[in-house]
Image (cartoon, rainbow, N blue to C red; front, side, top):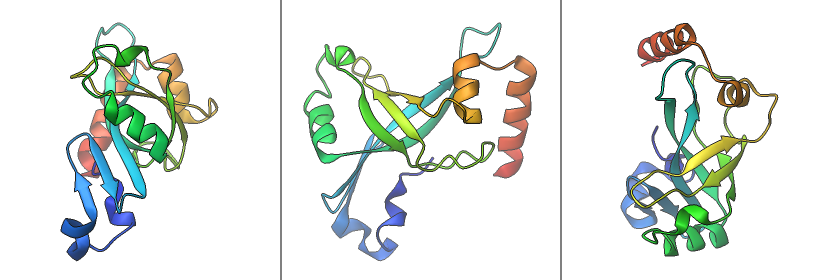
Length: 145
C-alpha cells in the first residue's frame, strides 16, 4: 500500500515536504508513519497472509522507534499505539482502526495488531482463515487492482 502522504499535501510539494523511504514517512515533521504487516494466520499453512500497510505514530513514538531502528534488542520494546492509515479493499472501514505496533528484529517489518476486536479484520487476524478464504481474498484483491 502507498504511504498516506497524499492526504496532507499536493503532489507538486512532495520533494519539499515529505521524507519517504520504504519503511517510514514524515510529512512536514508533523505527521509520522511506519510501514508494517498485519498478518492473518492461514489454517494448515505455516505462512500467514500479510498485508503491508501504514500506521501513524505520534512524534515521541516515531523518534523512539527510529532511534532504535538498528538495535538488535528492539523487538523487546513495548508496542507503540498507532492508527491504521491504509485502506484494505476487502475489509470495511479500515482507515483509522486502532493498532498495536510491535517492533521486530532489525530487517523485519513491524507487526501490527488490530485493536477493535469486533472488526472483521481483527477477527480474521485473531482466529485465522481457511485456505479457501485465502483464495477468495487473493481473487478479490487481484480483481480490485
